[in-house]
Image 1 (tube, one colour):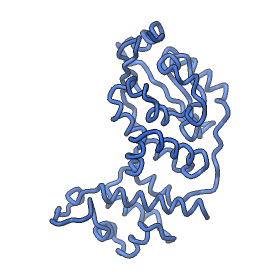
Image 2: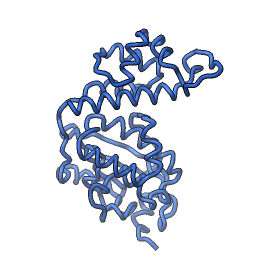
Image 3: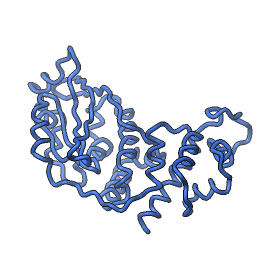
Image 4: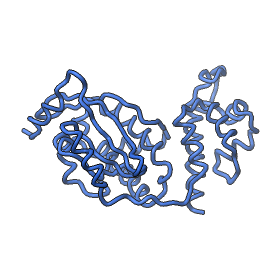
Length: 276
């Protein structure tokens, strides 16, 4: 019951945050004057989705009501959610009961895969985005990964709470926001298990940006992109950020930062990885 109540609460918070972030002109409505609501009103969402105002209000209040996928998709369209947002919305109505345990170590096959990606930095993430394994190139790019202990040995903690990462990643705020939206979307199934609750509380306490951005409920699917690093010894590095999900271990993710054709970032990192 507690798990279901948590999901109802998060569903309510997600709907309210997305409604307040959707401007009337985005859905073909006049902006109007004297609006007290930053975004759409509840009755406007209900009208656009074809449901009653009372029913939508109860849904946004976290009451125990049933909603079909078709109705949820209609609400998602009214709120201009993309595919990742729609999937997240539906996932929040089905909390499930399974608790995903973080593996103690990566399967040997994945460790060999990381080694084969050298000299490109690569690592394996667990279900809460904890670092499960990494190759030598990743340790050269981010040396602290070797010394971190749980729960701080986690990609999201590294992005938000380790000040050294802000200096390392060029345009940190853009990448941190994108990662946070991907994290929320990717971890819906484990949102309220003890490890996730501990991680969110830790991040909210240690990162003012996380504390400010987490309640916005942004979600996004993974997007391949370039990421630039300002390395203290190897200089400016550019890698293509890729993510793979092993079919045999779907709760793990392999993240590879691949070299860009014509660029020698991986080679320079291999030679000049030491800190000066």
